Amino acid sequence: MAVLIAILVIAAILIMWGITSYNSFVKLRNKGDEAEAGIDAHLKERADLIPNLVETVKGYAGHESAVLEGVIEARSKVSSLTGEERMHAENELSGALGRLFAVAENYPDLKANQNFLDLQNQLSRIENTLANARKYYNAIVREYNDKIMVFPSSVVASLFHFQKREYIEIDAEDRERTEVRF
Image 1 (cartoon, one colour):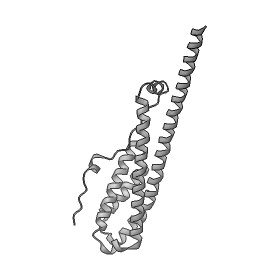
Image 2 (cartoon, one colour):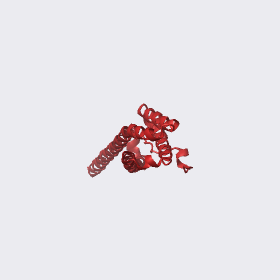
Image 3 (cartoon, helix red, strand yellow):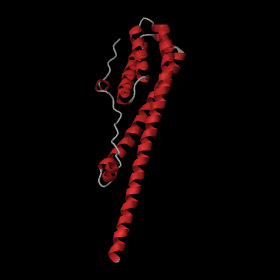
Image 4 (tube, helix red, strand yellow):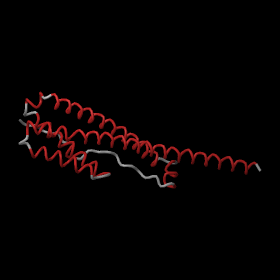
């Protein structure tokens, strides 16, 4: 009888641990989804700001059409993609914006234009917020992936098919220093 009670107690402990472990996976997955949605909201805000920025620069630097078209093309490409392809497109858009601001440096009147300065400040704020949101997302993904890979929670992860999530990373060419020449 004592053996049966011991077995029941051990079984109850294992069941409670399994439930707790499963619930923590669900919570981490939901946090990751929330963090990803937050990044999407900031990206939408950035995408909405870009046409105003491009129009302002066009007035001063209209003959820099290749740079302006690059920004517009990168922005439209982002809206049609999802997942990892979208991350790469977002990195391309960031690079195109960097080139746009490098071109703007050649136009003192543009750099002094209050509308341009406001747009540039808003974009800078959004980029900083995006960087922080990406860091938060990657921290959640690290915690989630660690839990999936560490024993004994890896048993629950494999039983319920919890899959690793991918980090948000920048492309290799974006890791290189951008050189601006005048």
